[in-house]
Length: 380
Image (cartoon, rainbow, N blue to C red; front, side, top):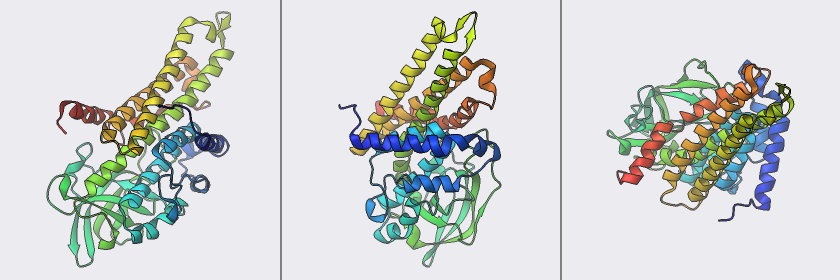
């Protein structure tokens, strides 16, 4: 149990922190207000190796661990949580191709994904299949050497902008065992997109419905065997949950730092806010919650790296705790700023809006409790 970062991990951390401070934080407000998808900034992040963090090096990936990634995503999210979260989703989809794809698929798709010359989206949720993901209805029927795909995916990050859509579709009967994983390329006939969603936060990444109408996808684009799609999707989510928890840590840490500076400079009743014990206690609790969440995230990442059979449970625990703690810390930081925290002149309200969705996506925090309870009760 060595909690000290290695020299290499400190180098990753410092590089990500410097990039976030230089390239992301100064632009984050404009990206949010103008709903800009910062393509060039994303590609600059990829030039540092952040586009294929867990992808093997033979196709341009960085070959890093989940623990390394958690450290990096915390730093990126301190600059812009919305943009960092898109990088996380892109990495999740890329890893699924790397881990479960064949040699030809890896050579075809991954070099351009690792450089972020092309972007990838993860497509599981449907209008009528959210938390009950195994009930998805998008159907893929074989027709010669293609699948003909019909259906729709909802709330897809990168929808309309990404170049590849890693989609879970039904090739067999009802339930999880009837689901397969395919890669749908953007120029495929029959692939369409809904209008861009108007969201509370996450405005630096596009979100839209992905629609398949007699969309012909080559059988060669299936990742893994038929019927393995749900397993592939869930394994992708284990890592995604660590990453989104780490993004909550980064955004919340940035808010805590703002709050600390504010209470040291703001004076009321003849003294600094920092001199009031109630304020001191609040800051202490915020820092403690973040440190506890960070330990849980890194512990879950280490379990996943070790292929621990209990990794899914620990990823669910860490995601639930870190995303709840992250949002609470942002909210407390806003409260400490009073009316100033509610203004867009400060980044706190943006972090609050961006981090709120982390309690919903990659599996709601209620579903995280279901996963943990099932493991505890032997119902899985």
